[in-house]
Length: 386
Length: 132
Image (tube, rainbow over all chains, first blue to last red; front, side, top):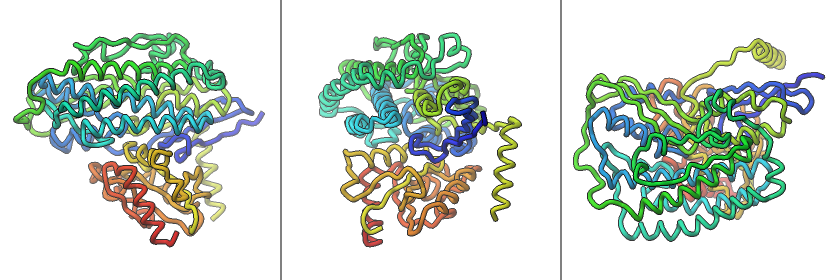
């Protein structure tokens, strides 16, 4: 049978983000997938070197608009190590609250997008509606719906008062109820289970071999979560369950996310109830770091996020290396699509919770021979049509 | 363009902030369908293109192509600080930084990211201007 190449993206209604999957199919069956990136490269690592440590916080947060607080957390953690600053205990709790709010809205968002992809538009709209509650809470705590920018070296920029604490607790009640409902839908709806289970299965050994991280790894039965393995912020003092599923398919990954969101509700509740007294906003912020290097890692909603900072002294970083979870999850898993039907490709892709804006600080150039011929033919056709 | 403008969203290297806010603005909580606004899946169905993000060179080619594929009359909204001026990424090496260097822009919506209400306000302004 003839092999047909179908480009998906970079502008595609289901993906929302610029990435291109070149899918080669034989009939309905996928035989090869090449990931073409580069539409979102913004030169962030170079930009971080050019700007000061403090300005870098705002740039690090804008690596990704969905998981911005974890990016700043990872960056600030590293900067604090280099500057020899200990974060204030109350600030650690507020940071944790913001990061967990972000995890809930991120997981709700991907559940919504997945619902849209499999054709459940009502579920998509409902999830987006309830997600607005979390966005409201995030605005209440940080002053901004999306880019929190609440972290600063040694603490946070805004304290949490009694009124807002009570408001968060009462809103969380409502959110928790809705999350339980959505988890029930994902677990028991016949069509969703049929559509997602045994699609894009990654076995435990393959998951380790492909170095996938986060819910994708935990959905394959590996217990790995930076929050419990290498606790940071207020996590050493908070107990929570690490959600693990053994199935390894797209369905397991979605259930892991929804259960994690419920777990996050408990973490926020615990953090608010045991919020330490004392200041949260540091009086002075140091401007320059000592020579040395720091590695900091945090658990982003999509998995382990690593920042490697190198300092030679002075107001600017010498080098900032970022390794984001989506980079591992998208680029290492192209073999998972093989043998599935074409309609399963967006489902599998969405089940990794892809975040292209995180991935694209590195340009990956795919130069297989087939790829080259395709490009040449295409350009040839364009020349002729002129 | 008088009745219901369909909107196509193109992410030209954004951090996802503006994209998710645009997506949120198109859901029933903010209800843009009362203005007749709907998300179009395809440039050939679209009347308005919302561009988000600091344009890099590779995405700019795509934007030009999508603009050419959209039937006239067509309008472009630059959404967010990055599409207007590059935002925090201005002066970075791979970026063009401004949507209006590639396609003509009709409405600018400032903010990092703009609130969904602001995005709807921008769309409404465009509709008022073109007599929708």
